[in-house]
Amino acid sequence: GAVVSQHPSWVICKSGTSVKIECRSLDFQATTMFWYRQFPKQSLMLMATSNEGSKATYEQGVEKDKFLINHASLTLSTLTVTSAHPEDSSFYICSPGKDSLKETQYFGPGTRLLVL
Amino acid sequence: QKEVEQDPGPLSVPEGAIVSLNCTYSNSAFQYFMWYRQYSRKGPELLMYTYSSGNKEDGRFTAQVDKSSKYISLFIRDSQPSDSATYLCAMSVYGNKLVFGAGTILRVKS
Image (tube, rainbow over all chains, first blue to last red; front, top):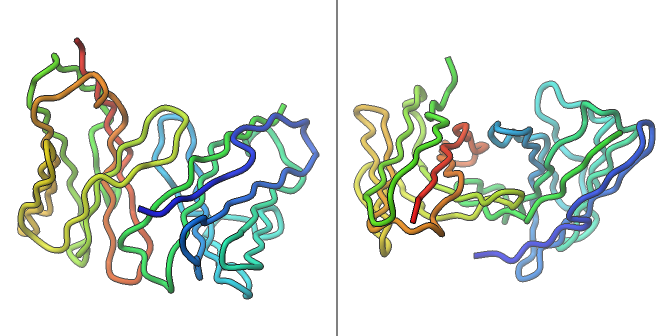
């Protein structure tokens, strides 16, 4: 399977600050990056899909101005939670993909965000 | 009605038991079916991947897909305490996003 890293693994921040989460695909070039969010005892929900060098596509109900995604290279994508609030506290997981195929996906280890 | 239904558990079994985990779904267009294992505070790990109907076996794990009943299963033989985790089913139509079940918490007691 794919080797995926995320940084940081966990972060605590004050309400109103911005947090950047990095996702790296270590052993293949990810033309697509999927960002998921998982609340406690709930399943993974796709937030957005980004393609290298182009704007991300956001799922319904996800604010694109709040969750900024940059996919500047085939090995790195970042998710920035802007002006974070306690309700943004969640587990954020990235998943790199090749082209647009989604039927098999490997996931990063996740970043736990706690907004105080 | 959710697209994918999965009993959240928890499911507690003794070590060595056969575990049966299940999901039902409503979208008959789903073609790809996956099972993921997720340990606490970790990302999901792909366990099994099946295309269309049928069975697939990998070591102690067997995945079954019954498209006529819109029902998928994951069987774990000779369960071990290290199998204790949350098991997520996921499915998709080709080229479309994965849809996940809520996950079943499994506890294997030694």
